[in-house]
Amino acid sequence: MNGIQIILLCGVVSIFLYYIFSLRNAFFDLLFLSAFSGLAMFFILFPEYTNIIAKKLGVGRGADLLFYICILFFLFITLKLFGRIRRLENKIVDLIRQQTKESARFMDESKKK
Image (cartoon, rainbow, N blue to C red; front, side):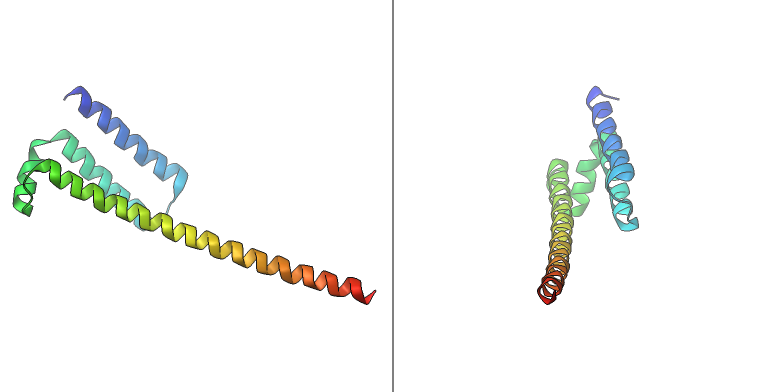
């Protein structure tokens, strides 16, 4: 095993463990990340198979195949972040609405006194 393989494997495993313990525990996210990490470890340990798999999939080189897979992964991450931002925006809107209603009630009560 080459030194770069050890470094890359440690990086993939550490990112995977960080994700499991820190970020999310949704089953789909965990399954997706497990598959992606397993695929990354396979390609790191057996780089010659990237060309074989790429040829079978109709891609010129293994490096191109990895590039395409990374594009899909980053698109997935972008969509996940977009969804998270939308949920946060909706929560903020709901909180502001609640606070406005409470403020309006308080103003009505103070005017009555």
